[in-house]
Amino acid sequence: MPRDSDIERGLQIAIALGYTATDDPVVFKVREFLALVRNRTPISKAAASVKLPLSVLSSLRQLGLEKFKFQVPQTPLNPNPVNSNPTEFTFDFGA
Image 1 (cartoon, one colour):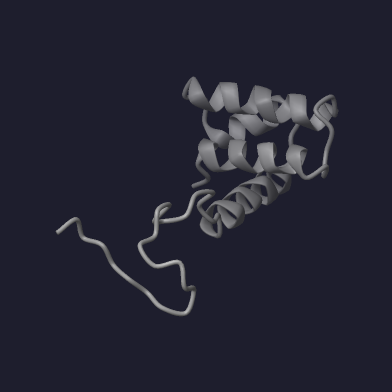
Image 2 (cartoon, helix red, strand yellow):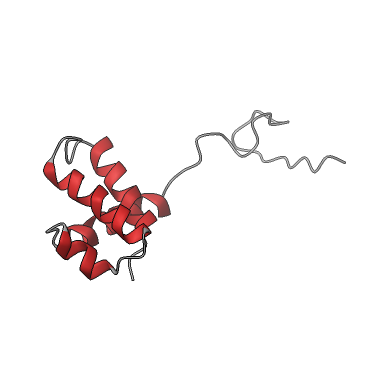
């Protein structure tokens, strides 16, 4: 069962990467679909009511899952490393 957050993330990624424009009719349909699903309308009924193919939703969900799965943190794990030599690792456990 697709999660609406995955689909929404996929839509945001598709817009950010230029796969679709914010004023594209499909974007409006997806947003309307998301509103319906969040108001407990079954997925298939919500998709049919906005005339949105399930394949589009599936693609957006997949995009959202893939980008989320491989997302790299923007900040380093240790922003203040004790050792600046990239070939050596020093772990500071606060001791």
